[in-house]
Length: 265
Ligand code: SF4
Ligand code: SF4
Ligand code: F3S
Image: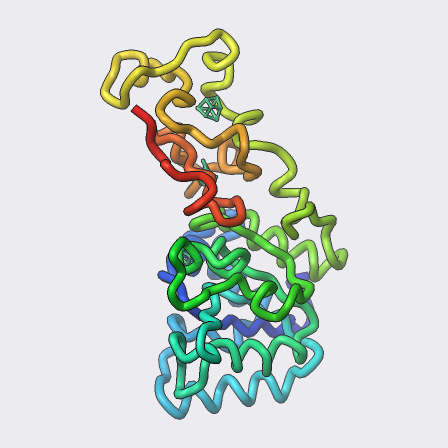
């Protein structure tokens, strides 16, 4: 994979917070410099490119034109669809029209983060902009979903490398690679033994919470959430439950509505 021509990647930002890009930039295994200089050719990424204005628009269209049918499209962010998509625009064009124009020209599309995969916080009720996940905005177009708010960089880079070396990974019903989303957070959780023993923390500042007791009674959604964070951790250091915070279900479709309230106390 690190020899020969690096596959082109075009990365579009829609309605989002850029936390997913920030997560990927902190990849350490492999480190992001190796990914960018040896594995892929990142031909367009608005927050990493130095140019702006007309120059960046030109760069996007040149990259799409030069690599039509060859590039991997990475999408970050949900897509406002109300009133023809006018609530989300870049360079005078709606995000919706940009997605409609560029998606058919890609070889494969990966949605990075829950916003791109399922709409994310933009789609939370009452959703005045009628935001949707990218696949839903195109009526159910085939895309690989790598959700999380943000996802772990290992899940994203692993998906890219898998696609480039082996093709489309096996996906679950929510479009996620089972390689990274095949188990619940609960089944991999370091606090699972306390759940099984019926030992639950009664409050966040309790002695029981400090001892590592289960956070289920404080609102933890780990039993209903598919993700690999307990195994791979963020920055190889920690993840929400290890830090004493319940899982809020951030890799599940519509978690802002379906998993709330996040806290029970
Ligand atoms: Fe930000 Fe979360 Fe959306 Fe990623 S999924 S862009 S971290 S709000
Ligand atoms: Fe399951 Fe959450 Fe308890 Fe961990 S803290 S064992 S994920 S309920
Ligand atoms: Fe998200 Fe839950 Fe992991 S909130 S980061 S899936 S512990």
